[in-house]
Amino acid sequence: MAEQSLQTLGEFLIEKQDDFQYSTGEFSRLLSAIRLASKVVNREVNKAGIADIIGVAGKTNIQGEAQQKLDVLANEIFITALSQREVVCGIASEENDDYIEIKSAANGHLSKYVVLIDPLDGSSNIDVNVSVGTIFSIYRRVTEPGNPVELKDFLQKGSAQIAAGYVVYGSSTMIVYTTGNGVNGFTLDPSLGTYYLSHPKMQFPSEGKIYSVNEGNYIKFPQGVKNYLKYCQMMEGDRPYTSRYIGSLVSDFHRNMIKGGIYLYPSYANAPNGKLRLLYECNPMAFIAEQAGGKASNGFERIMDIEPTELHQRVPFFCGSRTMVEKAEEFMRMDAVKD
Ligand code: AHG
Ligand code: MN
Ligand code: MN
Image (cartoon, rainbow, N blue to C red; front, side):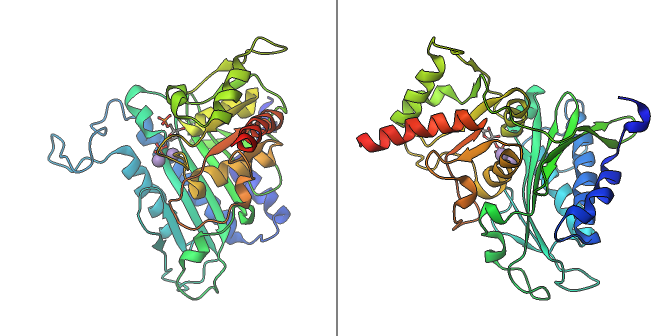
């Protein structure tokens, strides 16, 4: 790419501000806070191998300082950035049982936005130097500004999201997000600490050859999922597909969006809703998937149409290239009819 054509994330945010229906400086400041926090988390992730940072929360390190697991640290970094800049009225995080109310010193509870976040996704991969991520979802509050935020501000359907994105701390660090006008990806130049637009208008290929699932759970999966996996492995047409599973939703999704593929985290015996969380894992990824021409479903219905009832609710997740998700749904329906 020619030097002069490089656009930074900061420039992009300013240019796109007017395209965004609720555009005020406040929303751009919110995304800037996320951008800044992601750079701090990136620094911590990069030094995880050499710093005394990996450990069990609550233990002390050699200097007698309290050690923090990286997911706890990432949580603090995002909450600090968002609350100090006073750009949200509430935050719900995987790492906190309840939502956090943010009251700005300047204007009380006037902020319009709430953020839901998985500060470090795939955190078990940190210890083995494999990519991890951050996932975020942004809504306009439904209660009146000026009052404390309420649970119902967070329990909104995914279709009400006004923005969602993820950061992948990989062989290079990227931030990928949507405000409902397509999906754009920005790569961090670590020497400058600047994100540049590297993946404009990202699109899921409508077909793919990759399926991503924890196949160790095969025996516990519903029959429809078992049948679909057998279909993926069948010698016919462009099959068998390739199996790729990192165990970080962000990284698995990112690869599948670029190459074409499906990610599945179905229900399994004793876990009727699977493992992944609706509000800060599945909804934001579903919004990005749909904005990139892909699809996200619980096997039967659109993820973003599910009415949430709890902050940490789980949901089966089938997400990726449109025709692949449709095929998986077909297998789920066939099995449901037999029951
Ligand atoms: P988190 O690290 O935020 O708890 O999320 C881990 C999630 C997700 O990223 C990943 O796809 C999935 O858990 C992996 O689960 P299994 O180890 O059960 O396959
Ligand atoms: Mn996660
Ligand atoms: Mn997490």
